[in-house]
Length: 190
Image (cartoon, rainbow, N blue to C red; front, side, top):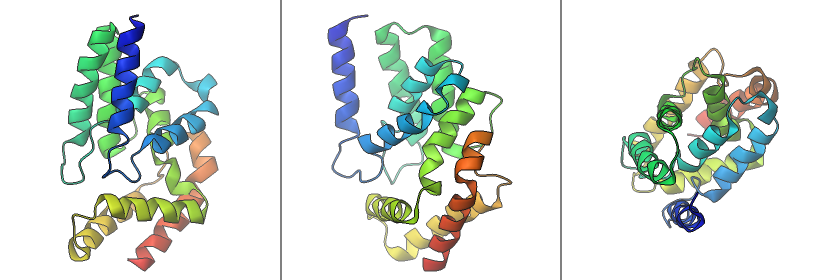
């Protein structure tokens, strides 16, 4: 692999996740995901592929767009092709990135671990969850409360309507109860 190319691609990822309008979808989000995935690394079949999915899943992020995952997947495909990643892996990474749009259970256990790591903040202690909600609100500051609050309620209710927010046993055991409490609490504040 071309070390200079790899370094440049990392700098590009770093710049994207450091954009000024980002308050939650930053490098710290990636760091948290990797911290969570470290606990289940032995259960992940292809950690390299999942790692690329973590790096690129929110690389394109615009609070006013409904195409962030699609754009992130395209962005990843171009960069990973340049890196020489094989087509089947690029297709899997693209599918994993697209899965973060709906967070539906997947037949792929690796995808389920990725999705659960992405949502792990929902089950964190109350102060961390509160900071997350404040940062999400900042990202969506372009919307006044009369638009933001109904949209946020819809998202939160969607999670509560699921049989389980988390797809893997590990994350269900670790975060499901607290996530539901956090979401209920946020709904009551909205």
